[in-house]
Amino acid sequence: QVQVVESGGGLVQDGDSLRLSCTASGRTFSYYTMGWFRQAPGQEREFAAGISSTGQITYRANSVKGRFTIFRDNAKNTVYLQMNSLKPEDTAVYYCAAHTLSSWYGEPPEEVDKYNHWGQGTQVTVSS
Image (tube, rainbow, N blue to C red; front, top):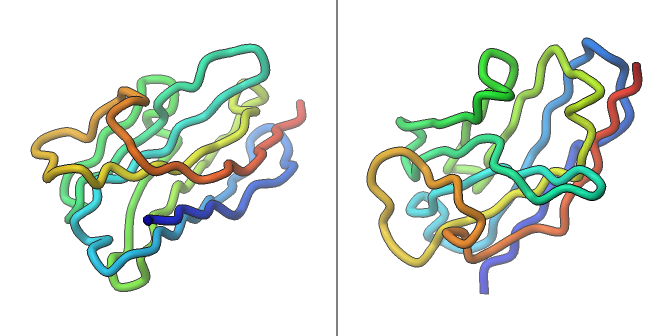
């Protein structure tokens, strides 16, 4: 069983930066496609960013392009989400997810159901 654990959330102000971390268990972390999703109150969970198993391919939603960066360190079984220029509308619970069912080629998927292991989430609140 793969365990996914996020950390790094918190309360920040408009324009601040924050880095989220996500560790996933398993000796085959370097084969996992990883994604970050977020869910604001009353809204559906939405894709924020994804990264291929090698880290060579990343994909970000239009809403975070130019502000968020996803990267990974396979030696540490960790994927990160660097969030800059945060806005109040970025306030949400941020979830890390792993796709471990198969080797995924191309851009990481945006669909929630393509990821089969999820963390508990970490709250990010951006005050205006």
